[in-house]
Amino acid sequence: MPLPFASPTLSDAPGISSLVAHTHSLGNDLSFANLFLLREKYKTHVALQGGFLFRHYAGRGRFQGYAFPCGMGDIEWALQQIEEDALYRSLPCRFCLLTETDAALLQQLRPDAYDYTTDPGDADYIYHRSDLAELPGTMFHKKRNHIARFCRQYANWCFQPLTAATSVDARRVAEQWYAARAEDSPALLHEQCAIQTALEHMRELALTGGVLYVDGRAVAMTLASFISPDTVDIHYEKCLPAFRDAYPIINREMARSLSCTFVNREEDLNQPGLRQAKLSYRPALLLRKFNAIPRTTSC
Image (cartoon, rainbow, N blue to C red; front, side):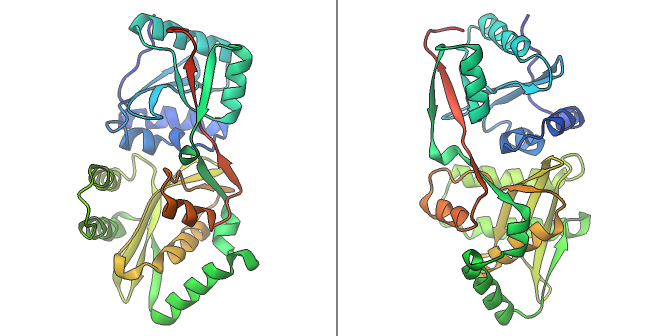
């Protein structure tokens, strides 16, 4: 029998989030907010069965195929469900978004059945929350200088947590950020729409976040959610172009507002500027993602 795949809906949030939280996962692809907000972009389908979360992506690039089953039960049984589903739907039984641990386990359970590929741009940047919050030592000297410069220039600033009231200002920052972008990019438009949807469903998506104000004006915003009790995923972080030094401030203040061990700031997508910015915060871990391509046409 095939798995009962369907596009994720808000009603799936409690079941999926609870299951993922118990696995203490670090990957941003397991955040329910990402599953829901990016469901159309990556043609995501999900199913909960037998204590496992199953996912299938029909998107492009790395988002093609089945994700590794997420759960605490019999992984052999879960892999068999995927293999039967692929056979029923006449789909290639390929996998995507595998962590290094997932890939090693798949190789152990299905030896020599797959070729594995990885792309540096797909790795999640995982940080110690305490590093982002305190910026300790000489390695964060430049970050502290940026913050000091911002504070000298804008003495009257404050960070406010995301609420129904401040979400209006977060939306305004996102709209102004998008309007200031010169390029006409479908990806940016999709991101802007996703931010609007996220703010409309803050409660259902269990979002946290904040807004940075200068002289009473909202100049930066950030949105995040818990993947597990230990790890928060930063989904979006936007600053108005005239306040670029606000990025280190809102990054630090958001980290200070959280109660967790790790912060996932997602991928760099092989963008050199984004990679440099993410590396400058000294990640504790680069969580690599792998694709597994079957060496035959089926499992």
